[in-house]
Length: 259
Image (cartoon, rainbow, N blue to C red; front, top):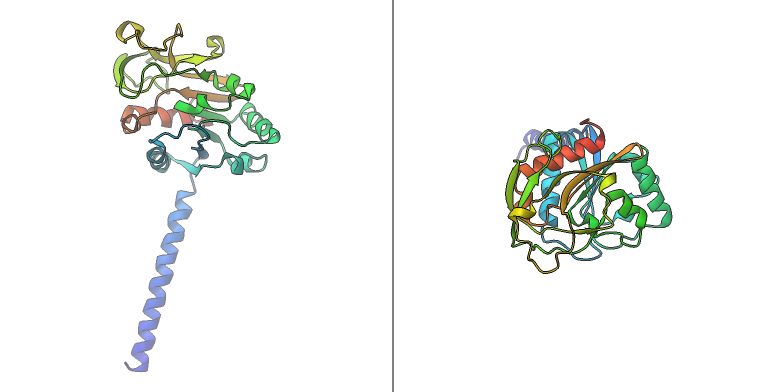
């Protein structure tokens, strides 16, 4: 190949690399310009749900299409530090067990929410931090068994069709899903938006011991906002457009974008 042709070929290759690298940088620069930042924690120190990986994919997609940045982690202790929390607006937990946070990190976590930030708990977030009472008080209660397993179909009542987080669900609907009951639940500190319809659900299930079965609620915590939903065990629930819309609405509300 003549020298000039070799030179032209080399220039074209270099340009292709530069253009490709530039496009790569631009893609990530655009992706990093969301309205606010979300930390999605899927750390499991107890039961690990089969839907976790798929939920992570959904969370990234929902963030990309709804204007917020999502950081995924299986190590809460890496991000939930006084310094790390400065870059986060909403924390989302789909977790189990006693996560390895120091006392300083736990204080920073609660102070983060109280200061005006947001927390969203999904399904087993109430199956987390049993040894940390302040966490249970913040989220609203602790898991106390699931009489209805992932293969049971239950009827759920939407208590507030005007609620901007979950009001889009039907007045009454059936769902095949694992349903929790709770201990240390204080209904006076939260606003329940969805609950189990006992009149249309099999209440003879072994292990039923609660009087009421709230499934979705929200509350103010200091200047911050806390939302929790018991739904989300099954991958099929994550694939439900109604559920995805609720998660997006909850995250936006927790961030202060929805009043």
